[in-house]
Length: 306
Image 1: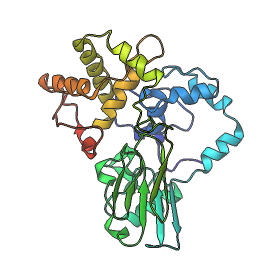
Image 2: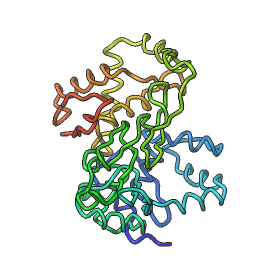
Image 3: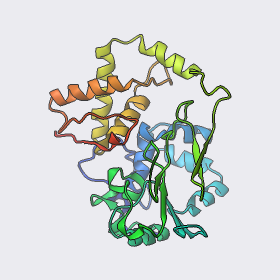
Image 4: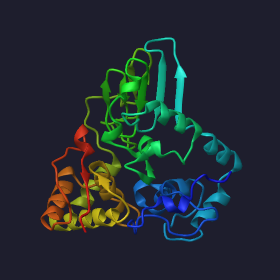
């Protein structure tokens, strides 16, 4: 049906790049434009899975993908719930599952709006930005347990790229969508809260994949200052489309640094820190805070001051 809001007005005017810019009948939400017009969300894999070439600048890319996706797939995607909320027989008697989490205030209102998939509800917006929903893209603002749900529900999410269990607030996302031997895909069995994961038959062996080996070889071809420049360019490009988090800095540097055709190398954390420090020295960042991408310090925001 028709959207209750003007979808094309969900993009802030000062966001000038990093999104798909072509007209769509009925409009397109900014999150959809970000997904289809930025390498961050790895839309390329989705396009290729339907045998469609991914070109984030192509006017026809969306039409080609829509034509290639079977109706059964469209029906399935259209039916997906934004929140799963159900009673259970074990304490505390209720389980609420949502992608990133919920803001601390008015949790029940958020759950109701998510259940209705109501884009018009301002309660869902992150920092009043019509193009971002806290439950889908929030970071530190959705990490904790809302007061209303304390002692009344388990609140479970992924999204954050680490595991964090504080009483009835559970974040389970060690792999961050990029599973490796050290950060596997995981699931939790309730009510025992037992975490299960895929693993190697040799858990003590420090194995390295072919991709990791290729990454090391590619990195050795670049001087440190060249790597710093690649990361800086990627960060500044993405800042044109939204405020980025420390975790997104890692994703940006991974997926936009193209080397030898389609392969994209992954800089080290130290490389990323060097690039951020350089940008701070050039007054391109409002602030620079030390962060470790394997901890909760991933919450820090970096703002473009230009």
